[in-house]
Amino acid sequence: MGELVQNIRDKVLERNTFKEESSFIKTCKHKTGAAALGASLKVLELFVEQI
Image (tube, rainbow, N blue to C red; front, side, top):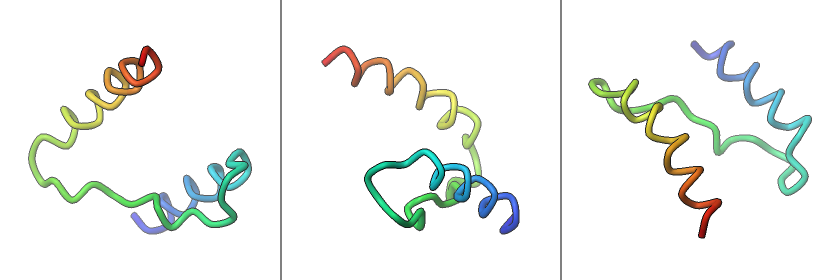
């Protein structure tokens, strides 16, 4: 899993204009309901954009 997370961190670093590190990207700690949590992130993102 560590290699996959690092791959995502590297991609974020290419596009992130605010930070020079990507340690804020972590795997989910929720053992159950992780898919529901991930699915809700898009809804939350749309809501925040409307504010």
